[in-house]
Amino acid sequence: MGNGFLDNWWRDLIAVVGVVGTMATLIALLISIWQIIRTRRASEATKHATSETLEKIRRQLSRYTAANLTRHLNEAQNAFDSQDWKMVVVRLGDLAEQAAQVLAQSDGSGTDWGQVASELRKWQNTIRTIGSSERKLAQSQLTKWNDFTQRTASQLDRLNLPF
Image (tube, rainbow, N blue to C red; front, side):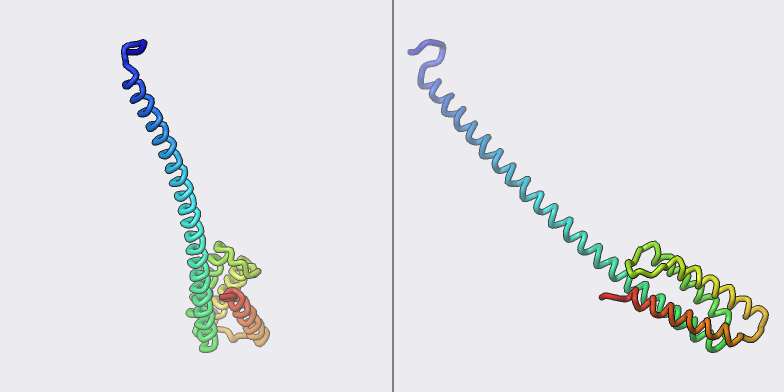
């Protein structure tokens, strides 16, 4: 027997268990580090996929909004041609509301949608006045209307690009 209350066999056993425990701890630490790296990579892949999905949703919303604006403009032009002033006023109001939404979305087309919405509201008031007074449309107003609708259609075309 050696010195102390345990003999050498027990001391060797405790030393071997200590070494094995230390090795198991180091292996567990390496596994934990490996899992953290994998989790970080998965998190980055998820973040990338989320960003791509969000961008696709924004493009689809922009496409939908452009189609809706174009439809409202076409309906306003058709109502204008048939002198249905109430419908023109309604569609111009719809256009102004959606132009304000496009402004909030910051579409990146270079168009000042706040200015477009303001101009739409001015035309809405002009047409409302014409409809309520039942006066004839002056040739200069007709020319301005045609210029306005052509310019607005061009701005909508830019909103629809590139897809």
